[in-house]
Length: 175
Image (tube, rainbow, N blue to C red):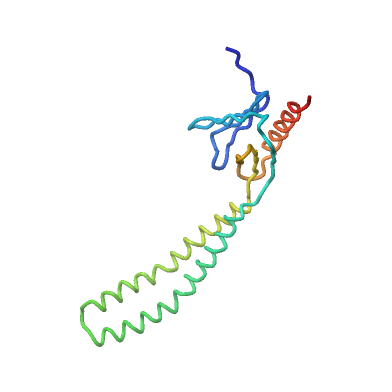
């Protein structure tokens, strides 16, 4: 059995593909992960591109969550004053029963709003940071679909690996 040594390799250390790696051979590109492997014949590759991109969906969700956190925090004092005024009226009218218990439960919920808004704000900031850090993406178009290999942040090694794959494709296409 003749086993060919890879011409170039790239190991994913960050992101969703962490622990897997790409290997370039003379006629194919192989992606090996923990669940299995995929082999892409270089003659079938229609296009290949490598680029650094910000993750817009993370930035968008981070902005939405930040606005939600501000709304939750802003609602705390008006709701707190409303519960306090209602508690005074209810205690005068009724002694025990469902209404005072429901009002105490609502008061507890309102008192948790600052903590909830802080948790949402922390999640929003994390999403904004991850979106801003972005990812380096290598797209391999194999008709009729596209394979996407991404790693978090700017990764010049993935760019170099993409250039090696591109050079091998160009070398194979020469007559």
